[in-house]
Structures are given as C-alpha cells and as structure tokens.
Amino acid sequence: MKKIFRFLGVVLLIAAISAATTFAVLRLNDKLKITNYELTNFATGKDSLSVPAAYSRFASLPQAGETDFTNAAELSVNAVVHVKTTYRNQVSSQQMDLFEFFFGRPGQQREMPAQQASGSGVIISEEGYIVTNNHVIDRADQIQVVLNDKREYTATLVGTDPNTDIALLKIDEAGLPVILMGNSDDLRVGEWVLAVGNPFNLTSTVTAGIVSAKARNINILNAEMKIESFIQTDAAVNPGNSGGALVNTRGELVGINTAIASQTGSYSGYSFAVPTSIVQKVVSDIRQYGVVQRAILGVQMREITSELKKEKNLTTLQGAYVERVVPDGAAEKAGIKSGDVITRIDDAAVKTGTDLQEHIGRHRPGDVVSVTLLRDGKTMTVQATLTNRDGGTGVISAEDKASVLGATFSELTDAQKERLGINYGLQIKSLKAGKLKSAGVPSDFIILKVNNRSVRTEEDLDDIVRRANSASEHDRVLFITGCTPQGRVRYYAVNLAE
Image 1 (cartoon, one colour):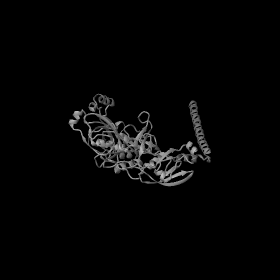
Image 2 (image 1 turned 90 degrees about the vertical axis):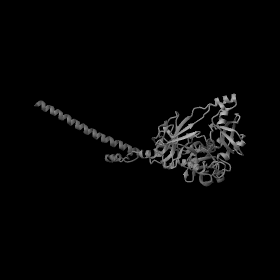
Image 3 (image 1 turned 90 degrees about the horizontal axis):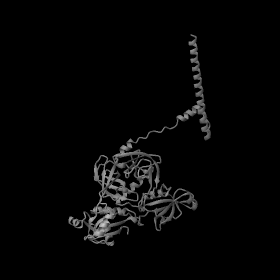
Image 4 (image 1 turned 120 degrees about the vertical axis):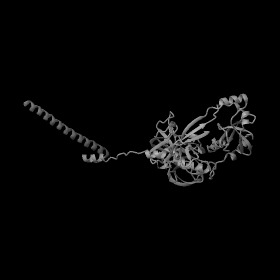
C-alpha cells in the first residue's frame, strides 16, 4: 500500500508541475503578443493597445476572395478561332537565278512545297468578321478559319493595318458567337485577365494573369506611322496565340494578343496585347473606308527624362516633349512650338509619348482636338485640326487595282503555260495611263510574282496592292517579277506613293 501511495504522489506531482509550466508559457506568449504589437505601434507613432484590441485588429484584416474565371472562359472560348495560313510557291532564288542565266526564261523554276503557319482570331460580329494580327496572315496565299466547334471556312482578307498589327477577315456565315467589346481604358494594373487562343496548335486554350502595365512601347513594329501602346500581362502566351483574345473577368474583349517578351521564342514571363481602344477604330475604318484613316498631329516627340528636365529647365517629368514641329502641320497651325510639353489630349492625360500616339491614333483626319501643354512653366490649351498623311483633312479612300495600275488582266491559257514551261501567271490585257505604264511595263507582260508572292489571279494581285497601299509611305512599292510572251525575264519596281 505504501508503494501505491508513493506512486500516486509522484503522478500528482508531475501533473502539478505540467500545469504550472503550461500556465507560465501561456502568460509568456501573451506578453510576447503585447510586446510585438506595442513595438509595431511605436514604429508608426500610435498608442499601444491592450491584448483584446490586438486580437480585434488581426481579426478585422480583409480576406482575399477567390476569382472565378469560368464564366469569362465560357463567354469567350467559342468566339476565338484558329487561323491557319498557307504559303505556296516559294521559289528558291538561287534556282531561279541559275535557270534564268542559262535559259533566259523562268520556265524551269522549281517550286518548294507549300508552307503552313497558324495563329488565332476573334469573331466580333455574327456576320463573320474576325480580327487577328497582321503578322498572322501577312503574305499568305490562303487563309482558313476553324471554329471551336470544328467548322472550317476559307476567309477573305478585308484589310490590314501594319501600323497597329491588326487585320480584318471575313467568312461567309451568320449567327456566329461573338465576344462583347470591352473598354480597355477601364483596365487597371493588377486586374485579372484571360488570354484565349491556340498556342502550339492546342486549340481553345485559356490562361490567366494580371495586367502588369499599360501603354507599353516595345518597339516591335517596323511601320513608319506605327502605334505601340500595348497592354502588358503575365498571362501565358505562346506562338499560335497571336490574334487571340485578351478578356477581362466579365468575358469582355479588352485586347488582341500580339507579342511576347522572350529570348527563346516561347513564353518567359510577359505578353503584350493591342488594346480595344485602338482595335475598334482600326476595324471601323477598314469596314467603312477599306483603309485606316490615320490622323496626324505633326510633331516629333522626345521622352522626358531627368536629364532632359534639367537640360530644358522643365517643371515636370510627365508629358510628351515636342522636339520638332512639322512645317504646315496641324500642330504648327495650332500654335504648338518646339520645347512645349503636351500633357493632355481632350480629357485624356498624356504621361508619355506613347500616350500621345494612342490618343491621336483614335481620331480621323479632320477631327479637332484640344491640346493642353506647358510652355515656360505655364499651362495653355490650343485647338488642333488633325490632318491625313498627305497634309489634308479629308478621308483617304482605298484605291482599287484597276485605277492604281491602269491595266486589265487575263489569266494564262494552258497553251501559254505549256509553251513557257510555267503553271501560273497573269498577263496584262490592256494598258492605259497608270502606275504600270509609268514604270515601263509593256502591255503584254506576264506577271509571275509581286513582292515575292505568286500571282495566279486578279484577286491575288488585288490583295497584294491593297496590302501595299496600307503600308507606310516608304513601303508602298510593288516589286514585280515576270516575263515577256517570248520568255524573257524582266523586273520592275512600281512606287504607289508617288
């Protein structure tokens, strides 16, 4: 019995020691909580609070809610299409030159197998209008569009704008699913967005990310009058996503995915999209006029840096610094001078030269805009009437092939193809005053290639001329390769800008 009582006494002693230890640890933990909170408030200059107030503070922290992407994905995935392009008859230049040297005619040209590429597009109307990137369909001989339900169509190119890398396609179908246009101006940095497209031919792929920056200029377009004001996101975009949709969490289109920042050719962190504020204007112009109406203010800009601010004694780092004013341009007529800093266009703030490009790019020739600027530290506002690329204020219509080139054409007969040893070509049937005659092209000349694209039909030639007319002034040139009816190879250059 004594042994049992001694054992029970030891157990009770251990229990008492454990309880005392637990109580001491809890008291020490409370003291640590109070001490930490008091230090926090000391650093912020606030009075320390008691323990209950500290607990209340922690409990009142906002909880991040989950973002649901399913509705946005369902609203957009059926309106994003797979754009497949075919590039035919790419002739090796070494082979062509070799046979021309020995035989003096192109009859022995050897055609390479057809090449294919793919991208994405976005249906913007039930009648079959589709937006994509210009670089997705540039120089393509055939454009196929595959819907999300696997229906396939041959698309017609309505028009392109290399200055923004946007192109408009059309398929013959009605009742198609569309994405509602959103307002890219309302996007905020940090907002969730989805990228929908066909990377690596993996159709109907959706990725998510946030808006990392806006009005980003990454200097990837080569056009003379380019407008780069990209939405930057970290949504994964890869080859094949070009021309696809960037949508917000409501499923509204806010951009057309265009490029990635990568040294490997695949996604490595950031992607870029043309905002719908630009896309809508380009598409509207192409549908209404056949060509984009580019408005010009007539200034050469320079980004404001700390060095420029100090050098020019400026009062701000925000805005677009006017380095030079184009003689007789809209800016000069409005009273804008070199050294001015443009800070607003109408109600839109201008923080950089990219902002200025974007805001002017939304207008058409003849539009009047309010330009707010700083001059010698003083704010002033002037009214500027924007011009077109020719210095006028009227819209520029898309010239058709017949009026530009001054010619009619006919496809080659089978007998002509056999005699010359070729399987395609377009012969001039009649020639009058126009670009071809001015360039010295003879009336019976057979056109084989223009700008390195094969010409089989008048539609092929129409498409090439339309693209050239949409390019910058220095790129509006047709490089023609062909032969006489006797098989003599000739080359001509036709400048459409003159």
